[in-house]
Image (cartoon, rainbow, N blue to C red):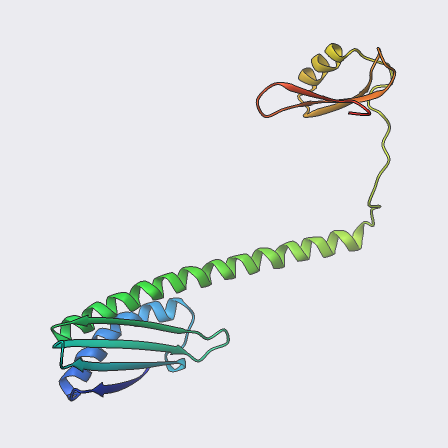
Length: 188
């Protein structure tokens, strides 16, 4: 991790640099968890003192020099410079935890896609299936709507095409989420 210290309206002493670098050591486990190497990260810490407000501001920019890269930026203000450093390190830590979770989820998603692609390719190579398959009617004899409903309940299916005994047309009875049934007839 390469650290650059920049001071605006403030002298950056060795003590301030050492304090900040010691606090930055807390972030190394997160960097390793994200699969980044230590030398692929550049950190710029900017210390600023606003005279008219008597406030110290600390900005941290972390640049990832890896494929996919990215930048993390956080800043905090406080009357005390060391408090501002502590607060900004906490914020960077939160952002690294979120980044780690996002990258982990992305790896998981890519692995699923790769696995699905392998399965799709292997099944496509082994069996070539037509897009539409014609199937016979499950029931040859005509049924009344009530008989079709009872048969649907017995089968435990979600829908049942049948020939209506009253009209002679093909109808479909189906189970709705609310627990009741729907009937599809031609022309409706």
